[in-house]
Length: 246
Image (tube, rainbow, N blue to C red):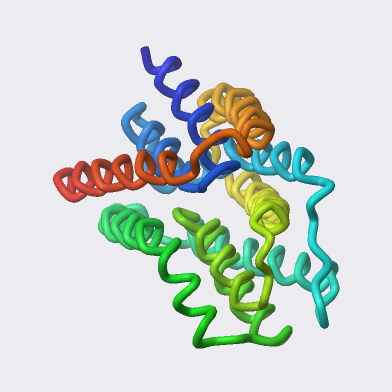
């Protein structure tokens, strides 16, 4: 039963991440409910879903945008640096402290996910950013991504919108690539620190890759608003459960 929970949650996370984001709302609670300690569960969740992001990025490979005034290499290195810092911060966070942070992180991620679609156009009308601000904010998002990552995709889409990108397929392509790579470098940190529960991670990894590829291929046919509504509902439920546990 536990294996089935891990498989279903990882497949759903891979699919959700490629269409609307929010896969962490499934994988992290599933690992905690399976008995994995929270810090290790968060690290293992990252290991499980990052190949799915790379699979989605490959499916989006023809949609990557050209960025004015900033090189892809610079943005990539910024994301990798942030991912490393976030992963190290998680590793150094005491278990009891992270236990107290979990419900608040889930709540913040759920709220951001819920308002992100309306917030981005509102911000775009009032704020425009240049390459330096783009890199600085991407570093902070990547740091958060390496630490927890819930609703990280929404943050990236909002940032890309402020930079002037409007093609949603191009934005999703860039989001999945940067998210996958910053999680990949975080994974290296988690493995080196011995913070990965390998049996659940391998089970979920295969399922998340399948979900990520399927999600990217059928994204054009799916209604993202319906997926977003499901993600928000899951986020609210998981937030309530973890507040109750705390």
